[in-house]
Image 1 (cartoon, rainbow, N blue to C red):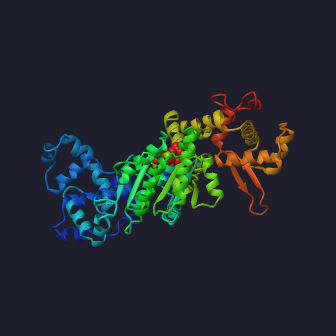
Image 2 (cartoon, rainbow, N blue to C red):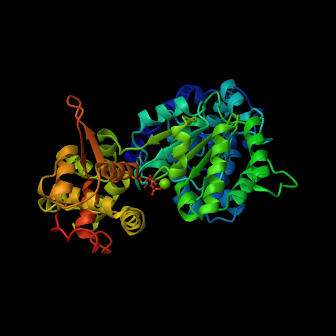
Image 3 (cartoon, rainbow, N blue to C red):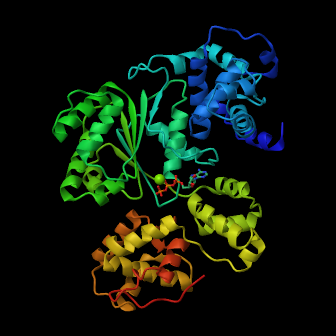
Length: 500
Ligand SMILES: Nc1ncnc2c1ncn2[C@@H]1O[C@H](COP(=O)(O)OP(=O)(O)OP(=O)(O)O)[C@@H](O)[C@H]1O
Ligand SMILES: [Mg+2]
């Protein structure tokens, strides 16, 4: 076994592997020879999905099928559209790595022994029942995952607390919202959650539906598509509310986990009437009886949800923070950064945001030829293009003049003294130094909105209970650079000095 594959094997998640397959029992004749390749494929495909968040490709399935039938690579290639070189040298080594990490349980899986591994797994009654039982929703033999464009989670670190919290509420709440700034890891976390839920020994869901709604479809089209995915109906009712009724009935009779990624864009990109329709749709999903769960993912909870939350409807908002130090350290170590102090500095600067960390690492690698010493002699804060685009939109179209002024004030404070500013100081500075003639309630409203958009950080003193405010270093950097001139307009204060 080479050192790379050994390292990868260590990432294998034992909780996904409840059976004790050892080298010893692999040498023994398999308990059952009645299993067929299709069953084995369903099983291994689900396990691979749970491990790395993607399904097996056609070419990988070709190799597996050949291995199952004990063909050599030449025979496999001859009966397939793929070249021998591609299958044997490029694809197979990675495939055996993935399968070793997924089903090897510490052993190396390769062409000659894969069939034994799969037969051992399949002969376990527990797995048989779990994955091959008829689900109420479908005649397919496994838990269904529809809409496969999920991100790669083969290098996923940490989030054990978040996953455990989500699993506790996922089938008790009809509606859960994952909220957080760009790149914080919402989509990756939801993918990991589905991957783990889909191999639970007692499945809570009959089907998983993943849909990105960034293109902001009309409600009637989205609902029609969901019905089509769950159980097509012919004829489909013409009117939106009737379609929603059909969908709700389906969600009553089945346990679906419905994930709508980038759902906040439904409310940003649609016009007023369409937003109202979406509000009604979500309201019905939250208020009417069913046994499914809507997991909505977005950067901010749309205002349209306010009344539901105020009315204490069963909707739970889950704000995602950055990776904890251990997980972020693992991410940095995987990129070759191992100096504890320097890694800690990066983690603090980017608050454990995996995308921002990755952006910084990429830039350090490219411009400093990976020489972290040179970089840390003159450290600077990078802003990812995703974060910058979000801030362009915020400053260009969403924030009020007052909210912008609060942000600029906080950026100035952080340049001169990068500490949190308490509420009393903020109030007096804004009215005296900045000459702002606005009421305290307007400032509070502005602060609330900024917090809702995850644009400011709030700290509460555990003893005095006093709250204070700060900015993420990347946001401070954006404000000081003001790349599109959207921050410092004639309505806001003059530009402040550029900070590192
Ligand atoms: N726990 C994690 N471990 C390792 N990498 C992660 C983790 N979470 C996220 N990432 C990586 O960080 C990047 C951003 O993650 P993701 O796309 O999930 O963020 P997001 O919050 O959905 O962003 P957006 O708001 O833009 O949709 C991706 O490259 C992802 O692979
Ligand atoms: Mg996302």
